[in-house]
Each structure stands twice: as structure tokens, then as C-alpha cells.
Image (cartoon, rainbow, N blue to C red; front, side, top):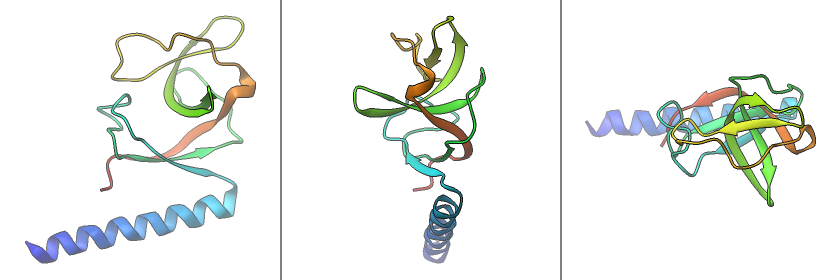
Length: 115
């Protein structure tokens, strides 16, 4: 049992190193999810890689800036002035429209709860 836990930690470390290499190689960004708003697909503790070169489409998980914080939620629609986002675990959409300028990128890799 102890060897299995050590192997799992080693695998997690390997994945983290590969993600860092990817981030530095392709101008991507690694984000750590602090809350459970994207559960069950991406619970708190998940790691995702964001590409700034890919624009959002309905159904995509994206990162955007709001009040100085990065928010990671799913695009659920548009309203003519911007995008409407919602966390998968939330009952309602985010209470504001997100403009193209506020979007940091779209998820290209998602790793649920590595640690």
C-alpha cells in the first residue's frame, strides 16, 4: 500500500513537470481550481491548462478576469455584448457578461484532482 501511494505521488509530480514544460513551451497557462464550482468534471484541486490563442465557444471551459481574479467556468451562451458563464456545480449563471477582452483563454487540458 505504501509503495502505491509513493508511485501515485511520483506520477503526480511527473505530470506537473510535464505541464510546466508545456506552459513554458507554448505560452499556455496552468490554473489550479480552488473551489468546487466546476465539479463533478473538475473538482477543487484540479489542474487545467489554458491556451490564450483559442477563442471561446459555447460549452468550452475558459478562464476570464473579473474584479482582479481569474474565474474558470463554462461558456453557456452569449447575449450580444459578451459571453455568459456558469460553473458546472452552480445553479445559476454568473451575474455579469464577460467581454472578449476579459477572456484569458480556453482549456486545452484538464486533470481532475491530481493531489
